[in-house]
Image (cartoon, rainbow, N blue to C red; front, side, top):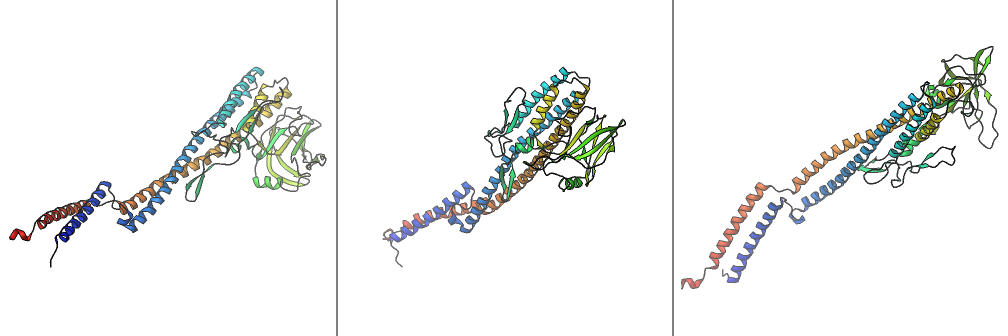
Length: 443
C-alpha cells in the first residue's frame, strides 16, 4: 500500500498530540490530587460527588448554626448565673434586714444597697450579645426590653415595663430540628408566681390594705396535695367567679382566740360585690399550729395549710388568694419601700415581719424560676454539644465518600504518567526516524 508523506506526517502528529494530551491530563490530576477534573472524566462519579458535596455544604451550615446557637446560649447561661448570684446576695441582705435589733437607719442603709442591686439586675436584663441584640427581648432583639418608668409623683414608686415579646429566636440546627437560642425576658423576670407559687397568704382580709392590730404573722403556706388544690380552686365552691380568695377571721371569746373561714370571692363587674360567706364554724386557734384550709359548708378540701405565729387581735384577718404573676423588679421595689418605712409601733413591726416574709417567698420564687430557665438552657447546650459531635462525625463520612469518588490514586497515576511519558518519547523518536525515510536515499 502506498502511503503519502502527508498521511505519514498527519498520523505521527496525531499520535504525539494524543500522547501529549493524556500526559497533560495525568499531570493536572497529579498536581490537583483529583481523579475527576471534569464531569466528562467520570459522569456517574461526578454526579455522585456533586450530591455528596451539596449534602456536606448543607450539613456544614447546620454545624455553623449549632456553633452560633451554642455561643448565644452560653452567654445567656453566663448572665443567668449572674442573676442567680445577685438574687442570692439580695436575699441574704433582706434576711439581715429582718433582725429586730436594727434601727430605721440600718434598714434604710440596706434599702440603699438594694437600690444598687436593683440597677445591677436591670443592667443584666438589658444585656446584649456580640451582634448587638438584646438577650432577653424575645424576637425584638433591637428593642430595649426593660425600661424604668419615672414615678408619677413623689409617693408613687417607679416601675419597670417590658417592651420585648414572649417569643424565643429559633435557629435551624438540623434537617428537622430548630433550637431556641434566646430566653424571653417576660418568662425570666416578669411572670413569676406570687407567694409559694400556688397561693399568696397575706395579712388583712381584703388583700393587705387593712392593717391588723395584733401580733399575728402568717407564713407563706404550703400545698400538701396539688390535685386537691386545683380541684377545689376550679370547683363550684365559690360564690363568685372573680377575686377568688379565702379569708381567715379572728375573734375572741372569753379570752380564747378562735378563727373562722370565709369565702370572699365576688361576681365579675359590673355586678355588685357580695358579702363574705362563712364556710366553716368557729375553730380554736393555737399560735404556730397549722391551719388546714378546709370548709364545712359547702364541704371542700383545698389540700393546703398555713401557719400563723403570734397572737392575732380580735377582728384581725388574713387572706389566701390564688397566685398571680409579679415581676422580680416589683418585688425589689416593694422591698426597698418597706425597708425605708419607719417602724414606730409593735403593730408596725408585726406588719413589717409579715410583709418581709412574703417578699422573701417572692425572691425564692424568682430564684426557682431562674433555676428552671437555667436548667432549660443547660439542656439545650447539652443537646447542641451532641449535635455538634454528630455533625463532625457525619462530615468525616462525607469527606471519606468524596475522597473515594474524587481523590487520585497517586501510585497508579505516577505509574501511568511514567508509562505515558515513555510512550510519548517513543512516538517522537519513531516519527523522526520514519519521517527521515525516502526512496531517494537509495538511488
